[in-house]
Image (cartoon, rainbow, N blue to C red):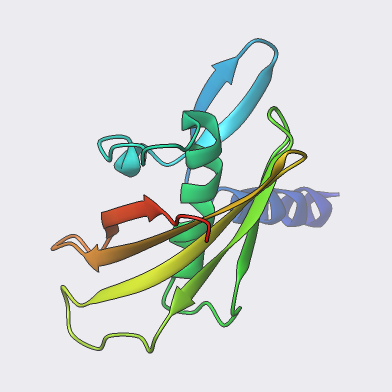
Length: 136
């Protein structure tokens, strides 16, 4: 019995190793939010809720151990989805910048956003530039 309690305790302790998420409560639904990115402005032409969802995928796309060529994202509240794709090779030096391409797919059509992220002194990727591409 004591061995089973010890095993259960070890399993529960393993769950606490996950870093806490900052949670925003809107109505009855809670969603994760990256507090470090709140000071970044929302690009012109992008809905703030869509940017929040896409920005989490952007952070995932630029994780050091990420091997995915594109990272999908979705905002169920606005029925908008898309992908984030890093462009070009990773920069080895701190403060190196990288470009990205982000899609916003809605029932009314799709938009593409091109931008650049640069690594901060704390190791975060900060959006330095982001703009919707014009249709030709």
